Image (cartoon, rainbow, N blue to C red; front, top):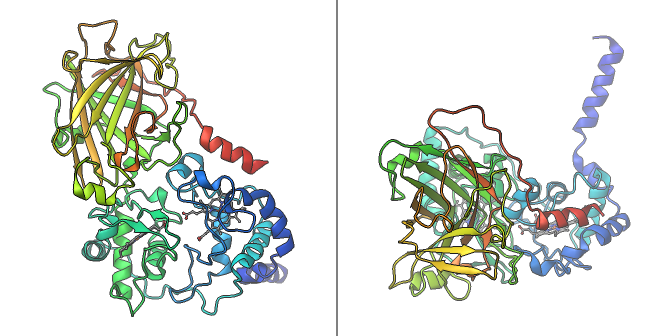
Length: 509
Ligand code: HEC
Ligand code: HEC
């Protein structure tokens, strides 16, 4: 290598090796305040107390930056002050490091790396530290020297530890359906993360990040440090790596909604499954959809607890059977003591619905986004979980919009449903003949036709009933012919981004 080139690469290398904190120190508080007063105050409040005007609509609420606890930090459990890099990282990536839709399933703290440059973000770090009077932390970040590689053995050991130390809060299978009612240090209700949905993690589900959270805890919340020798919950360094590998292994990508919005019903020769635990379901294709809060009808709803739903479908020459699966932290059975303990307020029934047009449109068009309209009525199949002393039920409704709803006889149309709850997940099967007698009132399914379909769900422990619920946008259901005719094209869905869209708009202003 010629001398000059060598010198140059040495200079480049040494610049790269300068610790980021050198730049961090350059954060300009005054400049930070100017940016904060434009971009952050409407959530975090003028003085950082988490009381901005948008705050009351957000769940979890915007952080009170005066309280002095930062949740996602690399400094050890006995060092309250985060490293500047930690704050910088959270401002840059936000807590929905996964863009609009995904942000809805996590929190509303946006990422700023596409809006503000590095210097502006360091300026913000310098400014928001003044809210809590933080200077530099006395202790540096934890190290990762004891890191062990992931292996089957390590994951298996981690599973054991998880059951003993984590399941009380995160649930037996990590779905966040623990048995404890948790509050953060400010008294807000908090929910442990559903660890099977890594895209809802505030930081990342990389084992190193999980290890950091387990070791340092999540300050301000009940997620404890497992490295604190004075706690009853101490785990050795090795145990913490094992459990981190286990948590990283339980992420289930099938539940993450993709761009594919076609639910494909697979043709079966024999009987269709009627129960949720029928092994035949393993052969069906799963498609997942985001839920958004219902914000069209009168009683608007901004604090949902359910984030997505996964569907599978089969049909034969007589019937169609649809399996719906969604994670719900609480099994809401009115009258049940255990359900009452963990609910917010009164316990109402959990419920799920499928919406279909009465007449399948010829063109690929969809009915009005709400519950149909006068020209395009919809069928709604609604399953309800039942109460302590009354069983689950299925209802059939015809709707021409929110005001015009007709209750129909589900049994007469041949509509059946059956559900079961297990470790944080509801599974419900709904089944109906492809054709019914009341042709003008019920959808008549047809093979090979793109049929609009939408789903809705109610979490009864979150006060959801009537128009207070979550729903998906219209997607397509396709009864896939046994021998494909030609290639299918994936229709483009105009997603309703009211919520996320507004946030984006204001951010860009
Ligand atoms: C749309 C509302 C919203 C806006 C705008 C917003 N935040 Fe946040 N922010 C939140 C919420 C909500 C949380 C808490 C999330 C949680 O606890 O999971 C949060 C958390 C934080 C945290 C805590 C990180 C940690 O590790 O605990 C920091 C720092 C922060 N925000 C800085 C900012 C800055 C700086 C801006 C402006 C550039 C900003 N936020 C704009 C909603 C917002
Ligand atoms: C006493 C209840 C409790 C226990 C025990 C507990 N957690 Fe948590 N955990 C929580 C809460 C609450 C949160 C959510 C905190 C927040 O962001 O508001 C959480 C969040 C997490 C996260 C999310 C990190 C991110 O980036 O979003 C991980 C990972 C995690 N816990 C792993 C574990 C593991 C592994 C164990 C056992 C070694 C464990 N937790 C034990 C309550 C608990």
